[in-house]
Length: 171
Image (cartoon, rainbow, N blue to C red; front, side, top):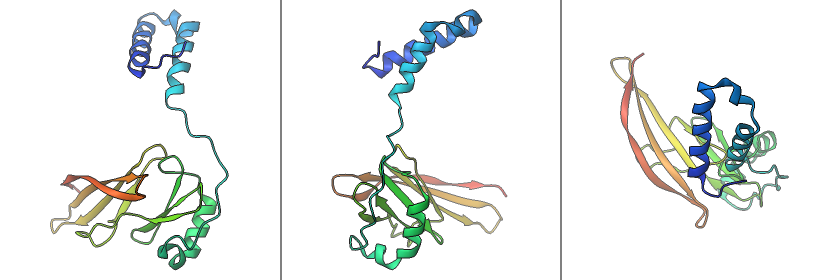
């Protein structure tokens, strides 16, 4: 039975796991297998789809960086917000392509940083992109600031969500 409420599934899974840890004979029961299978269904990966051709007329960045976008789009699978392919080059410039229709969108640019930062991180099943600015300090440490951008599917733009304070990392 698949529960529609994720919290119930999580509580059941944790209860079964804790019980199983104290009684290893339960590890192989059908009940545990069922709970684990049902919990796995909650975070199923999107189905792989055939990617559309890139629409190079959709944004000026697509024409300007046609070669790198084409090459990387061909190599990569969907890697952001369930149906986009994020492509980066240089220190850090980038774009993303909607695999459903080939539309190209620029990555967010931070006016304070004058670009995208040092690198970006993102996940296939998330609509949050993190831009990271890393600079060396005079003491030899590294100063790192992270800014979070939420992809707004309706307006097709990145919206600044928040920033983490700068922290130092010892060399």
